[in-house]
Image (cartoon, rainbow, N blue to C red; front, side, top):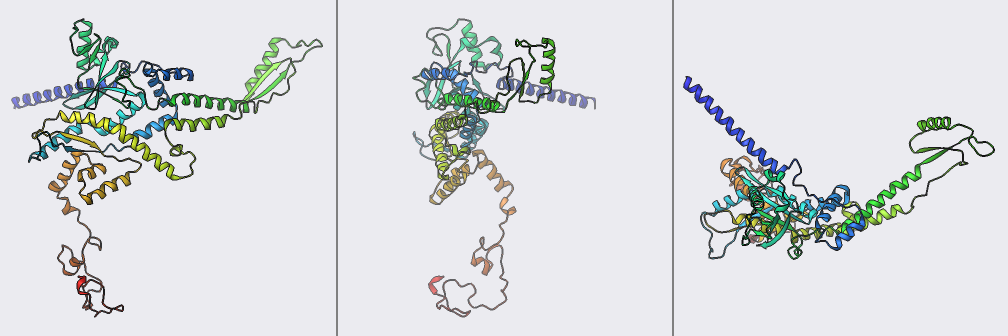
Length: 521
C-alpha cells in the first residue's frame, strides 16, 4: 500500500513537471510573438505634413519606412483608408485545395496517395492558413513589403514579423522572396526574444568572426536568413529598388492629409458660426480713462465668465464694442472641399465610392467594381501566397515522393453564391469535386477526416434519411414499392386501368380508359 502511494505521488510530480514545462515553453513561445515591450515595433515615425509626404514619394526607395509608417497612421486616423484596407482583406475567402503534381518521371497515381494526401493536409492545418493569410495580406498592403520568420515547434507553427528598417529583399527563389537582416541594428535587449538563427548571427557579428568568403553574410553586417525567412511585396521591382518597396496605396497619403485639413476647417467654421461675444464696457471719464480700479473690473469680469454657457465669450474693456457677429466668417465652401476630397481619395484608392455609401446611378457600377477588385487580388495576392505555401509543401516527405501544390479557390465573399454555383456547374462536365468542396469551405483535412468519419463511423446515411416526397422518389418506386418507402395515393383504392402509365394520351379528351402512346414509356 505504501509503495502504491509513493508511485501515485511520483506520477503526480511527473505530471506537474510536464505541465510546468509545457507552460514555460508556451510562455516563451508567446513572448516571442506578442512582444509586450514593443522591441520589434517599427522605429520610424509618421509624417503629418503634406509637403513632407510629397517629397518622400519623389524618392520612395529611400523613404519607404517613413511612407509605411504614415500609411499605418492613416489606417488608424482615416475611416476611408481603414475601410478600404479591410475591404480588400475581407474580399477573398482564402479557401484552398491541394493536388499532386505528376511529371519528372512520376506518371502514375500510387496506392498510397491517400496517405500522402493526409500528410499534406495535416501540414497545411498546422500552417493555419485561414488565420495567417489575411494577416500577410493586410500587413503587406500597409507596409508595401513585409518580412517574416517562421517559428515552429511540436505544438504548432507561427510567424514573427520583423521591422522593415532591419531588412532588405535579397533574391527571388521559386516565386518566394528571401531577405537579409542588418545585424548591426539588433540590440542586446532584443537578444532573448530573437529566433535562434538571429541569435547566432548576433553573436557572430559582435565576435568579429565573419570572413570575407562567408556566403551567409554581405558587407559584414547583412545576414542572409535561411528558408525559414520570407518576404511579401506586390512590387515586382523590389529587388532592383534595393530590396524595398512601398504600398500600392501610398499615393493616397497626400490626399488623405488634405482631407484631414479640410475636416479641421469644418470644425473651425462650425466654431465660428456658433460662438457669441458679450462685451462689458467699463465706465470712463471725459478723458476715456476707466473709473473703476483694475481689481474691481477683474471681479466683475470673473463673475460674468463663470455664469456664461459654452460658446459664449465675455470681453471687458473700456472701448466701445456692441456686437461682433462671427457667423459666416469661415470658408463657406469648406463642405464642398471635403466632398471633393472624399471623391479624390476614393479615386486614388481605385475604389468606387458607391461601395461605401456614396452616390451612384447604377448598381452595375458596384458589381463591376467588386469584380475588378477580385481580379486584382487573384492576380497579385494569390500567386504570391501559393508560391510560399508550395515551398512549405515541398518540405513534406511523402511515401510516393510526388510533390503537391496548393491552389487558392478563386472566389470572393461578395460574390460567394455565384462563385460556388460556378464550381457546382463544373461538376456536370467532369470538374473537380475537391475544388467544389473547397469552395463551400472544406479544408483538405476536413474533406478526408470529416467526410470519412461521417460515412464510416457515424453511418450518417442511416441517420439522415431522406423524406419521401415527389421530389425524392420516382414513379416506379411509388407504384411498385421497389424502393425502401412506398407512398400511397389518397385515391389508391379506386380501380384505375391507366395507373402507372406514362406518356401523352392518344386523344385530346382522355378518360380513365384512354390508351397511352406505346413509345412514351
